[in-house]
Length: 251
Image (tube, rainbow, N blue to C red):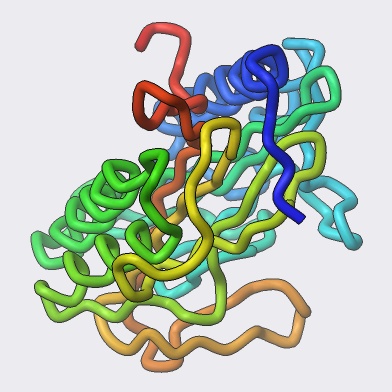
């Protein structure tokens, strides 16, 4: 069941989203060669709690950390730990914050040091895919319009679009209906209405879109070990167009 949010609820989500975005800006500053993913996780949790908020993912179905830290061929749900980031790596940091009982969800993929041009293009195109999807998050459109826009743009570069993991509705629960695939047919799927709040999150691979889960029960990697990128915003459908709720304080 899709839960439409009131304007007040959307403002609560925006407040959580602002903390999410500000925490990701901190991660952008700290993610350098030699830093461990565990150190990023600790600093992120400290910042979130300093804002009177909570990390939504920590303890969720037993997930042990604040951030999902997915490096290189890891697509999603990477567990932070002792791994040191190296020059040329990329890291996707997926973060959900709970403030006043509402969640904000956003992801960035960051280059570490000097990253090769081919991989930098993957990051650029994946971020552009996100905004192609957001452009379609308009009342009167359909869910399939979002997925179709993402898929068509990514595949025009020869990239794989992950099918096994998708975006979702979000509000007082971290994962709500509907699912928001990054692929699909224009004009198909649920009708988009004002009050819907969606986490739109393209996961795009340099090679195959096929993935598998590691034995830790969380980390998802590409089957061909080629890199993947992931960008995400929480977006409200309004009468005036899409409203991105996961923007940092300064922008």
